[in-house]
Image (cartoon, rainbow, N blue to C red; front, side):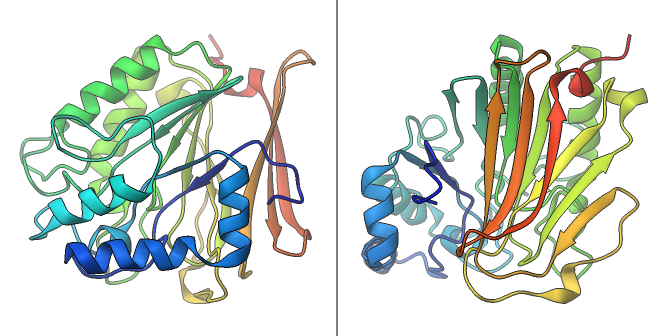
Length: 286
């Protein structure tokens, strides 16, 4: 990543694997992760932001009912330089603006299953009402060319026995997409991780949102792939069962319309696949 000259790094969780909520052990895991020489050198010299997934939140497939999650949050705040951490000692969601991109880093762990869903009172929540209100306000206020919604889990069903994906809470994803359309919010792209394969999907959401929604899945940063999670999907364009992958985003606003390039690369600098999207494609058709 450093050799590629990136301006900033976003970590999407399981960075590191901790799997406990004991505060001393949480802090020790972050210290050990931060001391890995190539990673330490990179993160000392390049701005970085972070959200968590299940293994750094507390346990595999864990949700907001997990005992001891307050310790997970405290350890995260000790070692992650985000500008904000949720609200009122709750959650770690945050956002940041970097030139023509605004990134909304969602917390899909802390609030999950802790209250009824704002989208459907008969189902459990993923984001929680307060985070949802924050997200709506941020998207409406944003004048960024591209708006990135990123989290540790994928925005689909993993198609395994686990429930930590947006597929389990599709009522909230569908409500989000309907809200984007109703409020004419353009330029939104989804990013997820966790499944140990990399994927590019393009959803036919023109009728609902006004333009197609893309999802970029980047995973894993380490060497362990899970080919069984590279499942068929009608929206799937590209996929790769490739270790040591990161996703590089390039935005060019010197051209009209502005363009967003997403490049999946491995640690040797090899391009796995890429996609170029111009801003007009992410604009409402009427």
